[in-house]
Image (tube, rainbow, N blue to C red; front, top):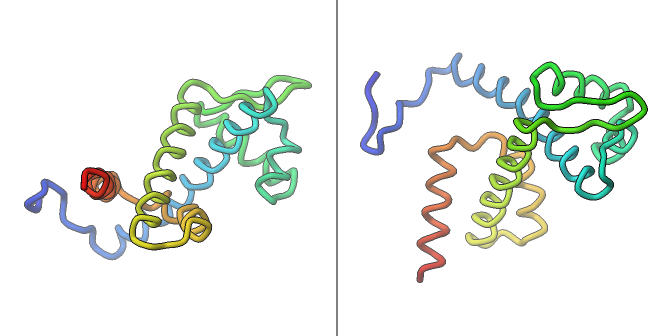
Length: 147
């Protein structure tokens, strides 16, 4: 496989792009739930399914299904009569998602997007930004801050 001047692989062919987009969407859901659970734990000491569902704007069964997937992936655990808790890996994922969100918001604001709009737009963009693109955003922000 050849690489471009920055060391990145060439763009994937069309079927691979669609497959990557579907995988990114599935991962985006996990990331959103991990971040929400982290937020609830920080605010309330635990994340109950009822609170997760309410904050995510989904039904209780939908939240239960997403949490079950987090548990299967080793990102969360739950305790009887208690809430849902993130594993170390789940907490790291939530931290990475939160940092990625901040970078995307900061970039959008830096190019003139109003902060409220940047927050909303970042919710979708943050999950689909590659590491290469995210690093470019960070370099741009660092250079802009140095001016």
